[in-house]
Image 1 (cartoon, one colour):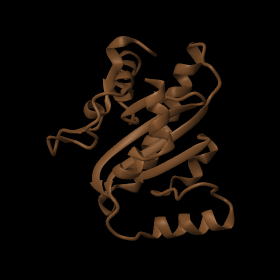
Image 2: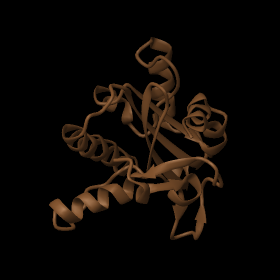
Image 3: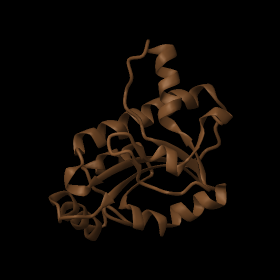
Amino acid sequence: MKEEKYYSSFLLTSYDKAKDESLLWDERNRVLNFDDIASDIYARFREGENLTSADAYAETKDRRLFIEFKNQRLSRIDNRAIRKKAFDTIALYSLIKEKREVKEKKNTYIVVYREDDIPSWSRFRSKALEYSGVIKSHPILFGLEKFLYFYSDIWTMDVDSFFSSSLYKAIEEWN
């Protein structure tokens, strides 16, 4: 999966064609364009009938990161589409993993969005789960909590939070 043709930057993998802009302006750190990997696999095995997938893939010392970029305000993001991508991404990765020797690491799903604009029921529910101990580290939005069955961790955060996160710093070290 580490073929050179799939390497990209955050700038390119977070590019929004509809708005003609990128969500992240980082050109230094390289990630794998998971959408391109998925498209090639679907073209070969599904005759072009694509599932959905995360935009980028990166690794840290102990994690595999599947990153979805949403160049939208929180209130405009389609929660159902995010959940579909979370499932399709891990399903596709599971197929890839079956055919390759893969070091054991935690799978982490990340959604990075434009900005945190208004309070939402999903955020309130997630905070309640965090306080009750069900979620240990940070709020999980978009109804993605159930996907903790497939992922060891799920992060949902705005761009500024992503750049200041330990995950982003770990990606910098991976590069």
